[in-house]
Image (cartoon, rainbow, N blue to C red; front, side, top):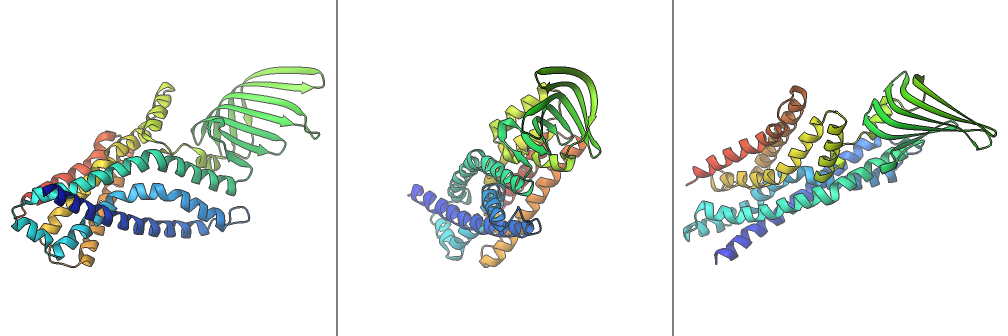
Length: 354
């Protein structure tokens, strides 16, 4: 009998969460599309913008899932409360904690869905979305995955194989062609420092083809001008949203081997790890509202409270994450603290329900 009740409660939570997530993602996609309208031009048109927004929806779903779980639990369990079904369950001898077990079971399934989307769907879809937009808006610059960033600058083609940051590059190749399409020169630079005035290349090897003669030259440092400015390179810096958990770990190891800062990616890694627990915390947080002072109110009031609490959680999460990066706080603490605070508050509030 109790297994039937668990499945009944879990189904209500899952269905309501799915509907809320669908609504929130649709609203987010609409607002995102409005934001893209200002960027439309002859190369980046409405079909590309729609495609970009569509590819971005898995990441939006993933980011909005904690709030969706909170609203879904409030609405799903609120329907049972309004129909006095929860009252009947308690009158039959089930405790609040026993009823909570069924809701948490639904939360586990939602958390597993979050992990699946966050690891298998959202990273590749988000990367594809950004590549689509960048290629449409900057036709001379394209992102080609493992081969790096390619750009055309007149009769020269530039390939940046490693982007440490938007102003620090490694392994830069430049191919220069003559009017007849023949390769006339190749240049390789081990490092490049970029600012608005141009590039500063280091450890340069140049090969020039002059008929049947080949001339090679080594230079320690040289200034160079090209179309790739820091503002444009910013579009191609690897973003944590485009990496799975395994991808984040691998990329952090690469940065560490090169003596580079990993704080941003370590913060993203812990946020991904804690994400499923955030979903469970949001469902746990809904229970005191359903059994407590809001058990007799309408769905609109419950939804409003859920939105306020969800936005508070989201803002606190973002604030601590950014503060952690600025002030050098422990990434695990910055990612865990909001979930931990809400979880402790939920357990305390649930313990006071009679």
